[in-house]
Length: 80
Image (tube, rainbow, N blue to C red):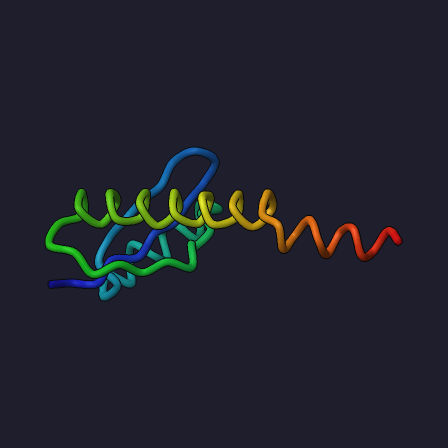
């Protein structure tokens, strides 16, 4: 399965195989920013779905940390 990389500009996310250097150069020249995630998938559509899953999991983890007891304890300790 090929590795896919992602570029984002505003709300548009472009994906293509990591070996497609010409597309990367074109997107960068159009002010797209490369996302850190790289995904191995069978198709570009599957890669985008996996990216959405990764980003959703990151949001859940962040929310759990911010609302969790460890975070609350740290904040309480700071303000004592």
